[in-house]
Length: 148
Image (cartoon, rainbow, N blue to C red):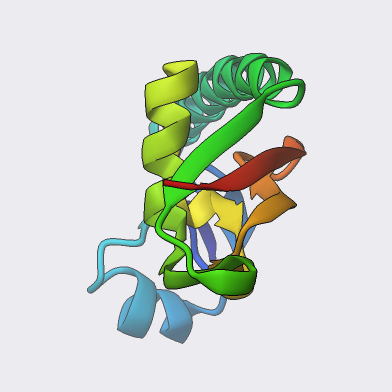
């Protein structure tokens, strides 16, 4: 059975794609959850329009992400934290703190989940944090933790 996906379905396809699935899979899983519709001529033309709109949206968001990357890569984001002897922080610097510092210093709003920080920063110094805004746009953000 040919169906048009209304949402992304893991292992099957993305929104707007036309897929061939078993009748039972459509009847028991996809249709009751509103994930797909039977593919008719009208629905297939709507799916094509949805795909074109998604491509344009993705291109626009990719361009915005590349612009943000171009602004952040040369910058050093400074985060202030209380530290004790030997440069150890009393607390830690997390992705929340880094996102707040990026917003304050660069005027750019990014999602904290875009930052790949293995563990909170617990020492003074400079570190490179990977930021992934989209699948194709990944760049390092230099963060310097200084004493308050």
